[in-house]
Length: 296
Image 1: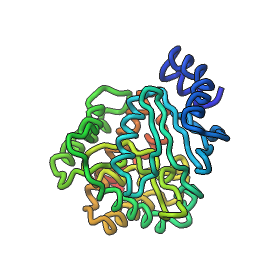
Image 2: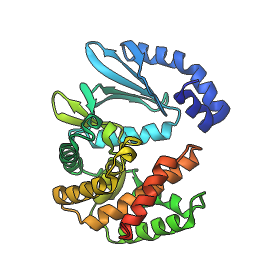
Image 3: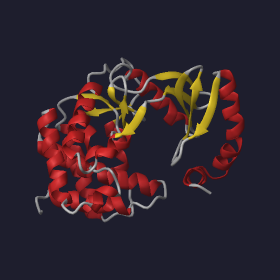
């Protein structure tokens, strides 16, 4: 059983297994109604079933998910980010839980620049963020707020209380001090920024949340994992990222440090919720805790 199947069964039990069993027929049906050909599943699947293929002569990605609410949120984000540096959404069907997108080509992830071209990757990510954050927030939108995301911190988790308390207090302070709410990608790490022949770099997999623009860089700052933890001078590498993003995006360094810590704790809670091993993220939580307390 591969990781994708394990995740589906771990998260959704018998319903997840039934969904997996029905996948081949669903793919066949979608291929028929959307005139798709040459569909092949991607490697290293995690929570969604992704296939490459063609629609007529256009290279596409077909994304299928068990969690239709999650796909609906991604659909809304893709539509809102249209023309602002995000992959193009071609078609979608909420009833079937499928999205059809243009394939980003050549599609090399920004991760290939790590760690030798670290500064270049920060500059690219900054340009991507600036473009994304010029997208207009639709009126009467149904996007989840960052405040809602952070509410998970108020639950009890198998995490040392000192880290949870710090994350709770910092998140409240950061939300109060927010100067501008924008539509955020929400998960803008190295593997979600891909090289594109037409637009240099495009993003994929937007979560689509509304919140403080300075939250956007937190995912990038703590990735890629586990490779980031293997760096001999990790503390200085992270500080350079914070200082560089502060300069390129005109955001105060202390907000970026604080959001990086909060995001790491948030991610650890999500992993515990999904019964995943949070050890790598926990190592970053401990380091960011020292950083925000000026102890290193």
